[in-house]
Length: 105
Image 1 (cartoon, one colour):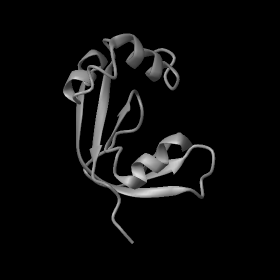
Image 2 (cartoon, rainbow, N blue to C red):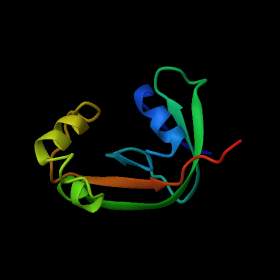
Image 3 (cartoon, helix red, strand yellow):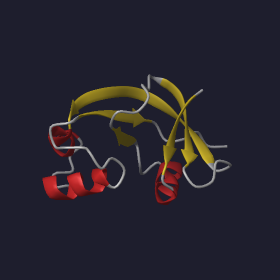
Image 4 (tube, rainbow, N blue to C red):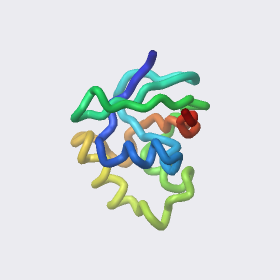
């Protein structure tokens, strides 16, 4: 199954269904279908979601595309992305991976 690491602080948002996308740069290709999010600090902590689609676009388009212009002005978005990808720029092409909330047990 395809998988991506995720920082621990975001897993509760994925589990609750509040977080329904992730932005990635120069990582493995993700396709529609099941995907495992794995806690970057504890590999026993994971959650399965269903990827609905993946879009590629320059980073400068992401906030508008996701309706987050107010929350993610360019400087905030770039600073947040550089925590994970120090070399990223606003014109870097990223993947926006959209997924459904995890299935209830």
